[in-house]
Image (cartoon, rainbow, N blue to C red):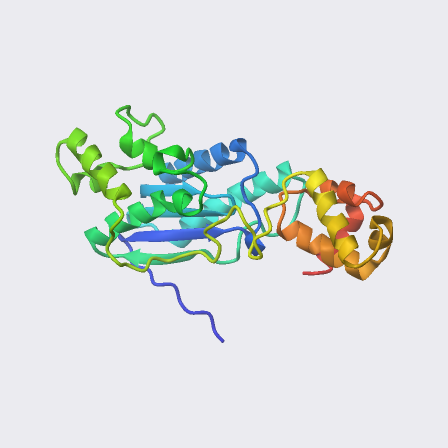
Length: 276
């Protein structure tokens, strides 16, 4: 079936979701998140778009932006390419970091923009990562609540706050109430398959360390009534487990090899390349 064309119109507002390829983690550390936000700031300077809201989750990103006359595909291609180059070099990996095509939808009315900003800022709450939006460091909600000027000039808060009041302090109070209100207009926003991104689709937690990777492999061996060494020697079962480990962990090729204990980093790379 041919791919459906993206709905775009210059000088428009969009909700954009960019997901990691095969749902993989795209931010392993705070340094990664800071780097992405710096790239986002530079992208704003280059393309002159307005950023109304953002939220960085473990394996995907939400953006609400006004394109200001620049094709969003150009914006996302530049942003994703720069971050993927950094990430692949840092973690000694190759291949696609992001899902081939980002998701986007046009947002055409002011009330939709308000609801979208609430949806984005509540994403970490929905995922069970925090109890309230201000508890999450990696979204734009704190900029909306802060009385200090954003020295990085990253988030354009004025438009959304102006929909509540022209007095900035009153607008912050009302916006805070709005975001945390339990009732909401029933608008179906673009969603990602796994917004509760602290879990994999089968509810297994993401594997973050070599020790956890080894436990995962040991469990697979036990399910097949094998010792770990026997399991690693069984190429078909081992290769299947390595592919699964790659998809649902933050481990590099070297760390996966270390978890296996009896194969090299190059062997892990060969197994994963054969799957492409």
